[in-house]
Amino acid sequence: EATNLPILGEIPRWEGVDKEGHRELLISSESSSSVVSEAFRMLRYGLSFIRRRSQVIMLTSATPGQGKTFISRNLAIILARAGKKVLLIDADIRKRTQSKLLGNRHGLTSYLSGDVDNIDELIIPASESQLKEVDFMPAGIMPPNPAELLMEARFDELIDELRTRYDHIIIDTTPAMQVAD
Image 1 (cartoon, rainbow, N blue to C red):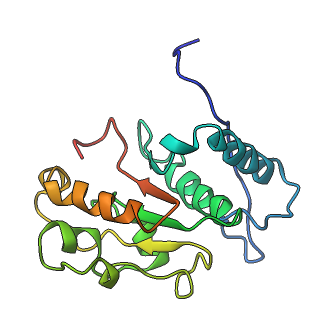
Image 2: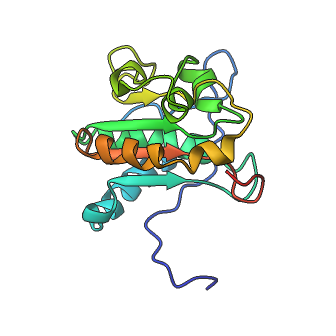
């Protein structure tokens, strides 16, 4: 009722824990019959209807703690399990949650600042990534000017190049109501 935008899926709150009692950050498996796993499969199906416009997907939330990192990581995995080549980018360069969990090294900010020109140096391949099915680009070192860095033309150039390499690019960003990034 609040918007006229189409709703492609709805992901219920996930309270999964692993054997050690830690909160699980990934849905367990494609064959899982959990409500959350099924919700991600339904979202993937919904995205298939807008395939031409869904190659680059940016996820945000209003405030921190609403699950955008969980959603972006699991959306990337569920798309990869459908045989798609997927890249997950940690563009939350202030908090770098994905990078802390999946590989904290030079990354997006290194390219945007011009320190690294070779995109391949920034990407952790699926074979080396904790996601195992998804390539990952860490946020990189936090710069003093994150919002300005993300507005650089190099970000558009990066996405244009990545579009030629991947079926889907999932971008995990900052909370929209929190910072200007």
